[in-house]
Amino acid sequence: MADDGNILELDGVTKKYDGFTLENVSFSVPKGSIMGIIGQNGSGKTTIINSILNITKINDGKINIFGKDHIKNECDIKEDIAVVFDEVPFNDSFNAKHLNIMFGGLYKNWNKKCFFEYIERLGLPVKKKIGKFSKGMKMKMQIATALSHDAKLLIMDEATTGLDPVVRSEILDIFCEYLNDGERSIFMSSHITSDIERAADSLTFIDKGKILLSGYKDDILDSHAVIKCKKAEFEEISKDDYISARLNDYGAEILTSDKENAKLKYSGAVIEKTTLDEIMLFYVNREKKVWS
Amino acid sequence: MMKKCSFGSFKCLVINEYLLSRKDISMGLKSFIFLAIIPIMATLSFKYGNLALLKDTSQGQEMADAIYSMCRLFPAMGCTFWIVITDTKAGAKFELYKKFRLSTPVGWFGYALAKSTAMIILLIVSIVVYMAYLGLWCSINEIKFDMSYMAEFWVMQLMMMFMQTMIKFFYHLTGSIDKAGMLMLAVVASVVVILSLILNLKNPGENPIAKILGTKNGIRGFLTDNSNIWIILIIGVIVLDFVLMCVSYKRRIK
Image 1 (cartoon, rainbow over the protein chains, first blue to last red):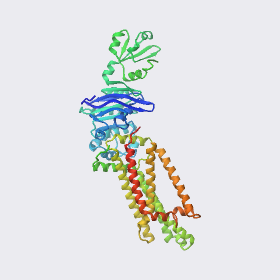
Image 2: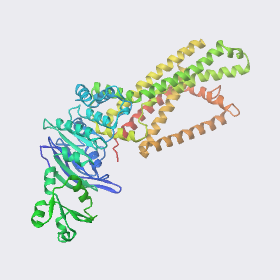
Image 3: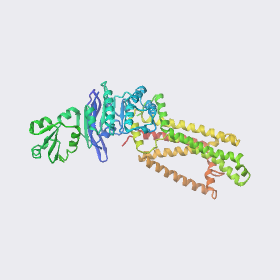
Image 4: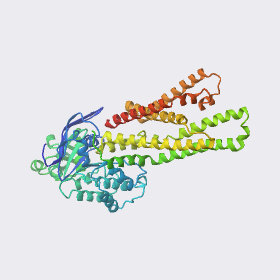
């Protein structure tokens, strides 16, 4: 875990709530990469982000950011972190000029010039109140503030949810630019798996407070596959070889986490590439094993 | 999580407090002007206008007394615009802002200090504004300015400050801004009832409005005689408020 190349490391993080536990969460985000965290509503994505930012206190485990303890060095660490929330936390009566004053007081490295350059580039009005912005404009404003203090880690909590594909694409392009120097990383949670699929290098899949998958996105997509077969053929597939199976009138779709093994064992079946959406769906139903 | 804050960034944080509350500050100033104009006009009328005809009657004497009290009490009530520098706004936005605040590098001490500084600056502004008003009132009445005229102002400041501090205290206990507001109102209502009962026992038969406005033996005498105590209490409440703010800002989201 104590790898110098990691910007963020979580080791055995546990947070207990009444009726929900984030259990023994461990993963790391390497420098210069984007990690996406996916999962259903209430799976623990926001709890992880709150724990990283010490917005909520963890019960157990260790979080290191830039190689430093996230509580002992909280203020120093936060100078280099930018956060984009799913909703704009700023006062509705504020405009870009007000935000410039506010952020000037919050971050040592606040770059006024860079901020107004982003404002111009993103086509945002300087004097218009945030309350009168559209959802896309509000999100762009948050991103402009987040990228204007030379942060090394950008954390986004469902930031692209509710945005149209054009704005989402524009934002993802900016993020790719932001990572250009190889020293920065992005940790983003999203329901929209297509965004993660497009932008992320690695991903973590969380369900009911437990990590089900964590690793390089391409490795995860390469190792998983959907086996399509008739119902009669499905009976021959060993339960140990798949995560869960969806039955329908025409046959079965089965998610396996070992594509190569499936190819060897079930050579007669159709084995197709899978998507993050499908992986999420089949894993969420893993306890039922067979569902329709 | 205490962090050294440069003067420049601290100044920005204080300005931010004013930006957050600028609408409320301007509303406060407008209501002060409104509450100051009415008694001033009444005084002018009593001196030079139609009400001057009542000057030598017993009814006129009572009225003069009421106007005298009104002139000091009403503007003092309106001169509490520092109150807007608080964290006692309810709703989802408040919770979101709290989350945002906790995600920034400024520690609890920096935020609490900026808020208290903004509050104290605004309190000083309201003192200056009220003194300017009193100067005008004294010149109309052709009397010499005396610091004892500030008594109602100090008490009003103390009351409002105490109410805000109570909200913070109850918020700390309950974790809900709505519940804190309700509890504060319950305490204030109880205090008002108890005070009314005490005044009734002290001066039975006196007109209750006259009591509130502080004629003769009522509140006014009590207020004026204890000016220094009010100032000490105000300083005490400011310190208490700051401590509660620090405790509240240190608190994480559950």
